[in-house]
Each structure stands twice: as structure tokens, then as C-alpha cells.
Image (cartoon, rainbow over all chains, first blue to last red):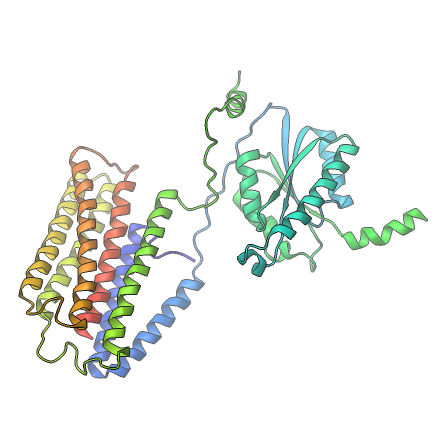
Length: 219
Length: 206
């Protein structure tokens, strides 16, 4: 949605539209007050519909500045339910072997919209904290030092916050497979690619397949 | 030492409060003006609610508007409306001029906008003096003075902003690259005009 007051030019255009709209309303009211009210309702409905359908211009791609030693690579890992997935751990391990890497794991505290509106976030944060703790321990057990934090429930906001403080050279986003991933429905990986000028790796973790494969491997 | 490592060192050796984290992708100053205008819309909305209550919802609402025996100076207010709307055109011209580096056009546009805004305000004062009723003459008079007076106060604030832009403009401030200080008062001025269109159409014409 675009605000009609986002700039002087937009506000000026909105003023002209307002003049035209009220000229119609006053003209119709002069014929019949009920007609004037009807014109007002139609114009108000049309204005709301246009406003809701408008898509703002895509913001410029943001440059993420490299910090730290030139040979060091800072990798931001964003995952929640899939944070302990084998596929994701493999990607992290490969990065750790390839580069002198520093990892920062963000687990967005996923919550329902109703609970977010009512500030009922403690259970979601506790779950995210538990997953994060297990993952960091698991990484440490294979010699990968990583730090992490719980992020905002909105993955894009969580990534935005982490980018500000961590300055990653690469962002790794882990999701469920297509069909089970809410983040894919929302287009989170593509949105992050469009927003930042660092490589974005999308890792698909199929926890069900991993769980099904485990007994076979044990056997 | 490279620029990159210098920057990293600066980040780690930084003293004082950390740099403000700006999650919003809207410029902070523009966002501030948007939030301010949002609050203004709610303020005007409360006055319009009172107005429609007095005129429509109230069981003892007068059958005519304005009530019998009273008269609104529709023509004078119409001329005043034309003046205010024209001032938005000159405001737009002023901003377009400074964006193109035309200082003369910018200053002329700003001064014209200010003069027209002042003319609007003075005409409103004259209208108040000659309107023939006062705030104590019933609820209709209260909402009339309340709504138009609230808008007049906004015009006065807008004139203060325009005055500051004019002073800065004559002192050589603003350029095609730096004109945010003109853009924001411009947004506010157009908002004040939009609200007047609504007030004029609702109170005087409908």
C-alpha cells in the first residue's frame, strides 16, 4: 500500500483527486441528497479498493557492508522448526570447511497472529530458545562456534534486525519443503534476495523424511 | 590498514549508545510526518464526529442547515477556498523549482504560497467577525467554529513552517540534492488543503 502523503508530489495529486471527488459529491447532492450520499459511498469504496490494491515501488537493493577480516565470511542462518535439520547442518559444515566463517543463527519466534496481537509471545519465544540452544550445542559438538538469538516472529523483520547488527556476507534460510512451508508461501527467500546484495542460500529441510530415514539407518 | 578492517575496528571500539536500528524502510523524517498526519486525521475525525452528531444524529437537530435565522458566507468561503487551493499549486511549483535548481522560482513559489495562506487566514478572521453568530449561539455554532477554527490553527502552523522555509531559502539553504526541508512542509500544506476541501464541502455546501 502506498500512502497518499508519501511525498509532496503524491500529496498534491491526492489534493487534486479530493477536489474532483468532492465536486462530484456536492454536484450530486444538489440534485438529491440521497444521490450525493450514494456518490460519496461509491467514491469512498473505490478509493479504499484502489489504495489496498496499490503496490508500492520496490525498494532499492540494500548493500550489506563486509566487516571483520577480509578472509573471514560471516554467515547468517535463519531457521525455526528446521533449525536442527540434517540438510541445514550439512550446509553449515561445508561453509565452515570452505571459509574462516563466523555463524549467527536466528530463530524467529513464530506465533499466531492472534497471540502476537495479544502479546502472548512467551511460549513462542521459549520454543524458539529451546531449538536455538539445541542447535548451538550440536554445532559446538562438531567444532563449529556459532552465536544466535531469537528473532521477531516475522522472518523478514528478524532478518532485517540481524543484518543491522551482524553484517552477514551470506544469508542461509532454511524452510520446510514446498507445501508445508509458510515462509515459501510468503516468498521469504525471494524477498530477502530482492532486499540485500549478499548471496542468499535456500535450504529445504524435510524433517519427516529425516525422521523416516532414521530407523532405517539405525537398523 | 584497509578501510574494511578500520570499519570493523570502529564497530568494535565504538563508545556510547549503539547506532539506532532502523527496521522501517521508510525514511525516518518522512515516517514522522506520516504518523503526524495520521494523528491529525484522527483529530479532525473527532471534530467531524461531533459535527455529524449535532447535524444528523441528534434528535433535536435543526431541520435546515444552517438553522433558520443563520447564514454561512458561502461565496466568501468559496473565494477563500480558491485561494488556498491555488497556494497548493504554488507550493508544488516551488518544490519542482528547487528540484531543478531554479532558486528564483522556488523563492517566488514559497512567498506566493505564504501570502495566499496568510490571505486565507485573515479572510477567515474577517468572516468570523461578520458571520453574525458566536460560539455561544447553540451547538451548531460551536461545531462550526470548532471545525473551521481547528483548520485555521493548522493553517497558522503551516504558515510558520512555510515562513521557516522562506527564511532558510533566502539564506541560501536547499538545493536540488537537499530539499527535504521543503518537501515535508509541502506535504503538510497539501494535507491542510485536503482537510479544508472536506470542511468546506461538508459545512458550507452540503
